[in-house]
Length: 424
Ligand code: ATP
Ligand code: MG
Image 1 (cartoon, protein in one colour):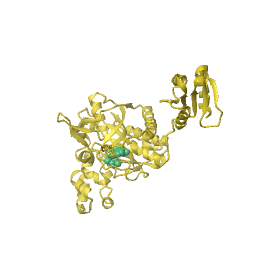
Image 2 (cartoon, helix red, strand yellow):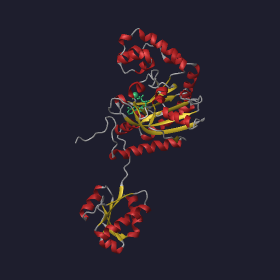
Image 3 (cartoon, rainbow, N blue to C red):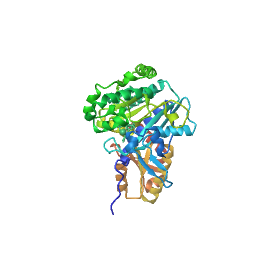
């Protein structure tokens, strides 16, 4: 029979890698919670209309990347492609919209893209959202928090903050008209995607990867000249906050982001270490979204980072999670020895709850069990044979040093292991 395979772009995360995942997730979780953010967990499936209404009909995500299907009732459902829409929906539905409300979430997102390094069909994001703060101090805090994360992970020197303001809806509308007027003259020179976007979502042309298109954009009208006064002032205040905490940024007037709900601040953390998948974290302000989804008008700002890309960056920099080393491995020989081993190891787990302690299972000769102990990476094998079982003792065989083995009273085992922990 043909063996079944995972769906392309939806890889298993294997035991060999989950240690690093857990380590990264834990670092982010504790950092985020130290800034006062509370976790929210949303469903993976949402009504399709939620994404169409928030992300926008004429975006890459909604047009071609969503996993959408009809359930048995004929309702159109979509596997969430991102977290903000669901988070806003949940906050409205559960009366969590407050001034301020700080939320974070983690989970799988789904997009039907061409799988490649750092671009998957099921990927993990951690996202943060702040509701109810209209002033740019909230934007600044989110950015400072992410900068602090890169600092803690040791990748500050290979990430760059790109920052822009895309202004109010009115400002963007005026700019769109000017941009389209300018680009119409060069329609034939634009790449295919950009030609299409000219009539649908012209702002997205700004982040076309096509060299000729980028060249044409050099002389295009500048979004910054169209910004409303409030957006300008907020942007100045934001950069002031960032300066005050030494967070460097590059203003990129062509940064527009691919989702329709943004206004004013948009930003991306970009690294050159991951090729075309260089954006590890992205976000911005979305002051109209809560109302657009049926809540009372409330400003919002947030970001999401792609954990696979962060992990790729860490790997590229040779940064590894500290290994959780096995301290001890219980070996039990003979019926009595096996029983003494089982009880001895289990009681040790109570007295040393943080140590990794394994024990042999499935029987085997003394030699076989010692081999398993060695393979586990344990520092010490705890051996219970008939003699040890009878005398209430245990023999310690040191697997990573040439210290001679010793037999001690079983009651002294915890303190002896503590000592080993501290010296090895
Ligand atoms: P890109 O321009 O790389 O397609 P995006 O603008 O579509 O990214 P967002 O919707 O802003 O991405 O998602 C936030 C972050 O989630 C991205 O910066 C990235 O780190 C991660 N991300 C997005 N799509 C994927 C994917 N298909 N696979 C892995 N990570 C992803
Ligand atoms: Mg994308």
